[in-house]
Length: 199
Image 1 (cartoon, helix red, strand yellow):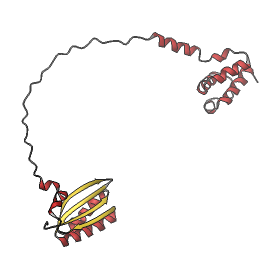
Image 2 (image 1 turned 30 degrees about the horizontal axis):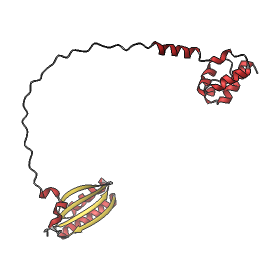
Image 3 (image 1 turned 60 degrees about the horizontal axis):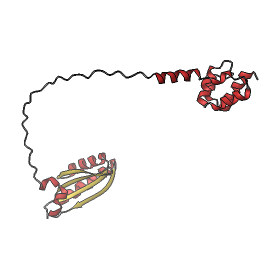
Image 4 (image 1 turned 120 degrees about the vertical axis):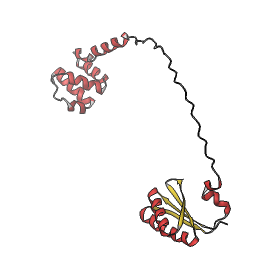
């Protein structure tokens, strides 16, 4: 058995844990062993010292943690068994050997002359330019229709976006600007037919 008592306080969040550790260290003659994050925002504070001092410190720490944050659990283990000492402070039983410093060797920088590859110009794509031109010319294919049924059918085959774009280019509409943006397909078609055939 160990000759000291172990005090544990678990809180949710760092602020409550720090407040509990501060209150415990101020309340009694105890030694702070470690702070452990156990996942899910839970933090466990471990202290050791005389049994009465640890009990007083844990009570003070629990009260402080409950005032500030979310207290999860509190426990005091008087004179814990030697087997759990590796759980209390895992670094105390394992001596860590210091890592020897590696001496750096000076290396001369070697500069290589790298030839730049010849710059490659991207080929021009005439096919895409032709497609763009054909789209611009066929932007308003319905403008030449003189038959009302054909004109309406051509308007109905257009998307609402294209209808709105076309409506903005037609003069004499009673709707304009934001009203065209808010109008639905049927309103746009009715307005375009009214202007085209003067209804």
